[in-house]
Image 1 (cartoon, rainbow, N blue to C red):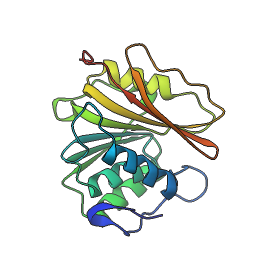
Image 2: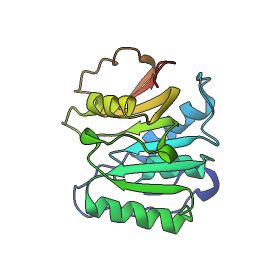
Image 3: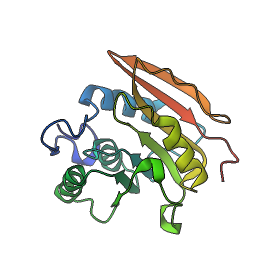
Image 4: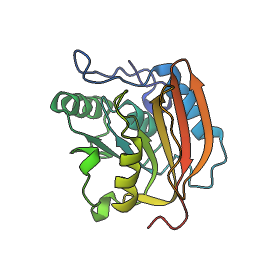
Length: 191
């Protein structure tokens, strides 16, 4: 697995042994970032934005965003082996000044601290087979993590039926094999 674009393009990422994580494929990451870089969302561009990566796993989505010019990454993960990999990847890519790893259960997420507020892009890639996307959206919405009109990118199995939470707008949906990728926009009055 590697970074596919930006200033760290081609750099390798480490991932935990076994099936602890299910990293987003390079093909799907490329598709996600092509959409983010070329779609005219009613939000700030990914460059210079603050990124929140939930169920972070290897950190690939958030680190890809940093490689492409994002200002800051907050990666949230509960598994110690995955956290070790995220930390290793952050160091090997030279992003220690731009990335923060928080050990937390996304489903029990605390209120955002001042330096954590105002995320413009949120990646949600919960474990397949666990219907946690709605819970994650509620946690970040009510915890002060989001900017007004933030873009939320959700990766789910195509077997999961998902309807956007009240106030959120589905702005794009793509299907790649057994994976669906949803792009939602938070309401203007999120905070």
